[in-house]
Length: 251
Image (cartoon, rainbow, N blue to C red; front, side, top):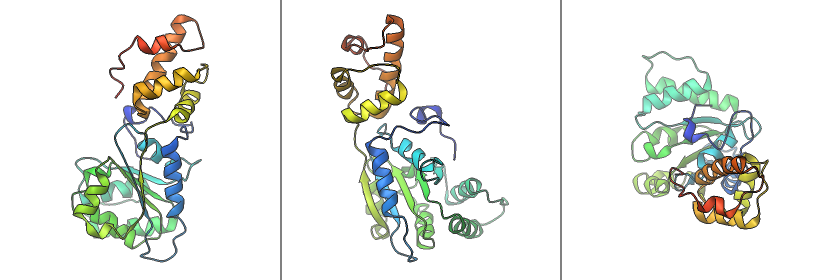
């Protein structure tokens, strides 16, 4: 699994299962829908898109986790070209390459290894290539394999893909729009990241309102509440503890 920066992995630590939020369920449902496609060329691509902080990357990490779907996971970088993306995929797939190899040779090795492994391919931060010709490299992988391919990006990803690359329309079987956390999601995050605390429903509801359902902000609020409770010598967070902080830095 390609490394993510700390601020991208705060909802998921190695060795732990990610909290199974609504968007994780969306990812599981989507990947299931594009699995077991036997006909070469039949659509087997899914897209999850939505605002930052909604937990899309964590959904991807769940799919990549051995206890999830054991997918091949690559996070695209803002500077990636077709060749550097191909090299990144080769690295993740354990393919030994040489710097002088052309993209066509890298591509052949990638397709061969993906078919051998039969594991889904999950690509995060697709926004970086959505309006570049590099996206056609992914489309070509799709057209020459039968493995599930899952693309993740921010809220404009669907528009970018369809407006700039018409050929994507017939290749994406499932479009999923990420949703903000509801009260049930917040309860799951609280149990996952602050399991020693006892949350009342009014505090859960207040967390939803204060954070706008943004998973990363919920995490930051839970982290702060743990500290507040520790200082107060209690295991039950109070509404007043939320009201005394502005929530700055919780983006």
